[in-house]
Image 1 (cartoon, rainbow, N blue to C red):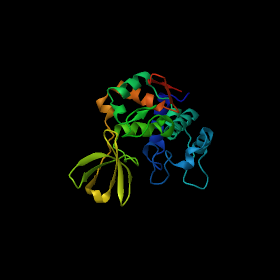
Image 2: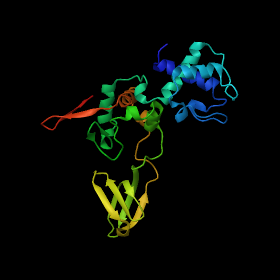
Image 3: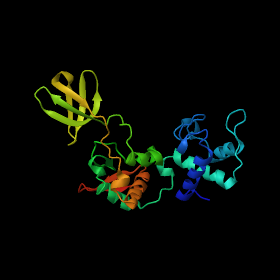
Image 4: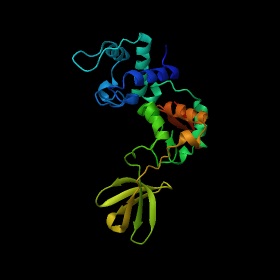
Length: 245
């Protein structure tokens, strides 16, 4: 049967049709049962354990047995596994080389993000993102407004002399604030030097890549990011670098 995108899609449809009376849609938390995606209790369960639980239920609990054909049960297992595993563990269609071209070009991602030693530092380093997040999380980061990660909260400060500096807050307490401006310059201020500190309310991360890119460009970008696992940068004597593994 495999674990390809078509199997994940079929399992997704089966899950939402048969499991959401208790569990939440798309693997989220439901009214009568816990989330199957993101809940660490289920993260290390094997595929066979998930299959046996769906087929046989859990005696003494509200989890009933299901009499679906084995192939359909396995499709649901593949979907759950794809949603809870890292993006790099998922078979993501797309051309990673073309995705890199989108990342460095039309997508404008390198202005804020570092990838294998290159790029900006306003956003998180994505050199190992494929191993750090699920495919669902990766897709949502590109297409939905999400909570702002720690150390990447946008902020504007105004000094007592009237100078305005905008960037992201790296460290902040009652007495001082350290921030990185949009030119990647680090600033440290005592709060008594400042007239105003204005925290940003939304993330700097665009969340419309599925709209500003073509469908193929978006898929290629996702495929490239999903493959970013323990990459390194080899630097030549002339200062030019190349991506390697």
